[in-house]
Length: 187
Figure 1 (tube, rainbow, N blue to C red):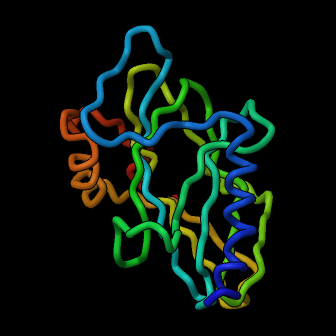
Figure 2: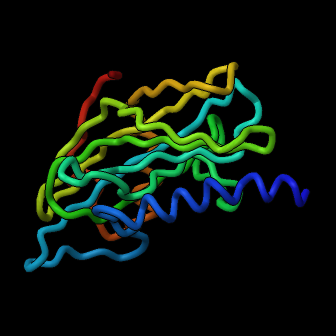
């Protein structure tokens, strides 16, 4: 057990270091009200992982402003310290407050109990804009870690029907009908 915990430490360190650089959003939960003075918007997004490797203990990427050179807001697909919001496949749902601007999802990091930490600069190709006082649903970012344990794929799915329920629980005072859906099709 002690050895397993030691293998997770590098991914936690990478996450903390990387998220300390660049734009970092705040997770939202509970009552929320837009401020007229801030140039902020909300992003609803879920992330799930399909582990064909069988050894993934943790997996996250980052929501990064395209103007930033690194870091960003951690988008966690799997973390043994967090209970999943989504059971099958395993994943989480988030609502983030971010400054208005253009964003991309990038920089995946993987760790596991039988894997060394891996950190790649792979860009997912998932790009979106955050507008002041608006809410966007990006979708479900699905990561598939391949059986070789050295590579992964990324796909964006529209799971608003499922995530709408999670959104209403996370931010109960905002009508989910006010959320703009990024894309109604699979990319």
